[in-house]
Length: 260
Image 1 (cartoon, helix red, strand yellow):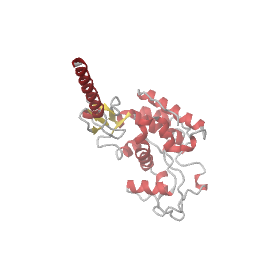
Image 2 (cartoon, rainbow, N blue to C red):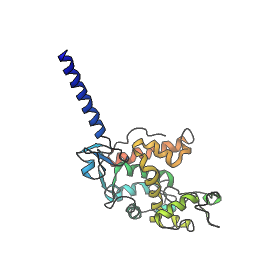
Image 3 (cartoon, rainbow, N blue to C red):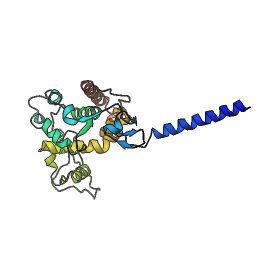
Image 4 (cartoon, rainbow, N blue to C red):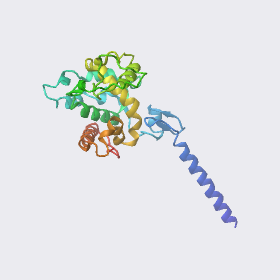
């Protein structure tokens, strides 16, 4: 009987220790942050390094200009035809200038994030060939029921930039975030390369970045859910193909759940 009691006490202590350890390894961090052994969230080495217990521990953050090299950028845009307007518009320098507004003060980012964003950029612009949506001006992208970001008379809100920003409410919210009046000047997205990249990064950081831990497929659905569930399997496969390619170039595991 004594032995049984001792064994029971030991098992209860062991179970309690296990539960407390498991609890300490999850601290409710954002998917892009690491949880260290003390239960705090962050993105520096102190959180994502040897003391990391959950989050993107194995994915080190690096300066964005060290990941998006000129060779990497040129490898994409060089596939666009010489007659493509985007070939003389999009540049690595304009991307890096835009990136400084969306990543932390040291412009650190993960290689997985870069692979994700450039896979979508590539698909949306056909290797940075297009600045604006083809025949977009013939489509009315004005939600007249949106009173917060009303359409300006004579302005069109068709897709522009590396993620083809569209609709008046997106131009309004994005412009507000960037300190630009994109409702009155939507054409600025198609005439200024840095602003164009800023609009793409605005959407990615606000809508796509929080889904990275769910797999690449979740980011496809966030950008263009109409492609999912048989809507356009060719487009989905193209995005996945670009993503795999860039993960390979950057030396990172693409992970699971690639399709939406």
